[in-house]
Image (cartoon, rainbow, N blue to C red; front, top):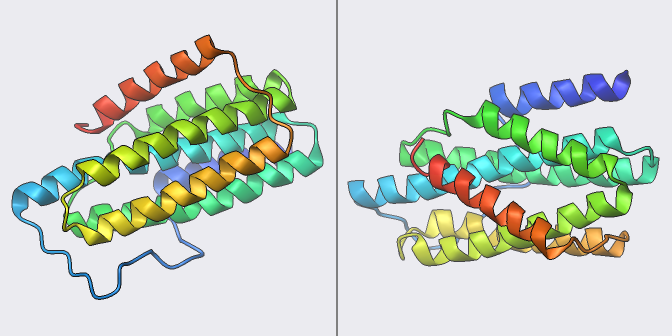
Length: 205
């Protein structure tokens, strides 16, 4: 029951509360960001997608922590979720600075990601960890593409995305070290398709 209450509380905090970062938002010292209206809109759409990714990360880790019977692994997922909260807060802060809003479909994204995380968790701890590895690898590639797509002088957004990319790579490695099972290629492909749908819709809505 305590785990269920914690999962419900995590959902409410992710979707309706202002996220608070434990670490300061990354910046590039002495690099000013001065964007046109069009550049702000473009950067805002990209950061909205990144914010959705962090909403989904909260859902995934919360569901996986709920599903596992391994207390050490539950602590692993909870710690990763806390670190992802920094990303959630940074992307929300940057959206505010750009004058853009989060995705209107965040409750839907959260519910879908929670379901996937719960399914992965029910299939066993090694599968659940493998799901983390593949998710973080795909997120890392996605963030790398955003470093190309963001306006060249949007130093504020770039600093956030670069730090997120490094953190996601570390989370993937942590999951591997914990005994992750590599997922079959068809599952990886299906995850890529689902991510493509999410990012395409979230870019606009």
